[in-house]
Image 1 (cartoon, helix red, strand yellow):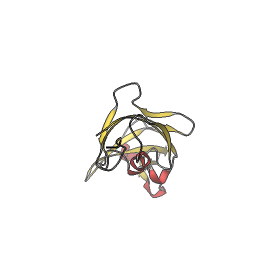
Image 2 (cartoon, rainbow, N blue to C red):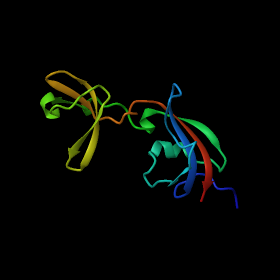
Image 3 (cartoon, rainbow, N blue to C red):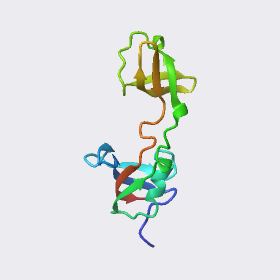
Length: 142
């Protein structure tokens, strides 16, 4: 029997770091416990999973994830302009994340810009449009 490699249906335990191209770390568990997921269960974006295919236990790689394989491209139609009065007396600042209630649950939006009358809210994923570096170290595969 050959050594296991990352493949659909396998349970993978790994350490990871998601970084911007300039090296800024967005998320990492290298200083803590490794994460475990089953390939194809939806816990990891498909493009990240596909980049892991075929890696064996012990592999330590830095993989480049293009926007279309990560969190998609920035979609201008996901930026909505709302009335400033919709925010009552809330203290606003660019980059502030605000939760909005939708029929399907809460959805986060990022304040892009505002004035006394209008507020632009960006509902794109914060990593949309970004090429990411995905550092992984495969701990186990079952």
